[in-house]
Length: 295
Ligand SMILES: O=P(O)(O)O[C@@H]1C[C@H](O)[C@@H](CO)O1
Ligand SMILES: Nc1nc2[nH]cnc2c(=O)[nH]1
Image (cartoon, rainbow, N blue to C red; front, side, top):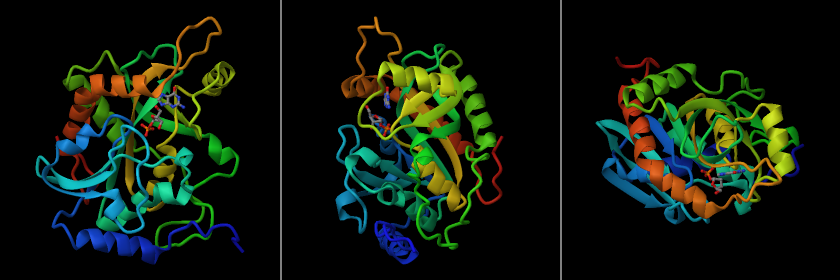
């Protein structure tokens, strides 16, 4: 019935990976963090670390992109048990969409309730500057329009429903918390909110593509996150996501600017400490089990 879905992982395979990890650490994470390009420093904030190289974790892919270390780090942020992906997987690395999103199901089986994702993205909104942090309030899943969706294939109800609602994908309470924490930290000038659009990459946008995405309502464009968000929501985790605007997408034929990965990593380094502080502070304010927030 689903002839081309042999890249899917079964519930049992996901469980085997989660059980393997749980057998090697006492940390029982309720928060799962995914670090975007150049933003892996977040993992270094964890105390009492137990870290695994992706190559040693059963079923896990390897990171192949500069700026993605390829380690899964367990530990505590101010006493809160967390697990952090220091590096994520992208479609353009050649992995199946099921493989790049596998860690979300592992998070769920580890006991994670809230997922916090970060990424580097190009700014489309003319009001955005390099170094802005955008709270993602919604997304455009362009590969999804072409039938590329991580939930393709047989649905296992132990993870979630066949037809997933996406109008509430990004938790509004957490967006509000991010705004409040950001204001308290003095980030008002560079903390924005907007719509993230995912493309397959690895090419950056042409000028015509940038203009089109802007007209479609996207504020930023990148090559990740959305697929992870879909799978995280499918298995019932709360989702919060941030983009660091590392460059302005070129939308003018007279511009001399050229998008490049080195600049993405460089801007990541410049803003990393502030982005980490925002996520860290948010984690310390999230209370689990009742989905409430601390004062
Ligand atoms: O993992 P993220 O989405 O942060 O990585 C972005 C998209 C590409 O992988 C890379 C381009 O510089 O950064
Ligand atoms: N697609 C895309 N991804 C990015 N990641 C960081 N910057 C960009 C960009 O300009 N376009």
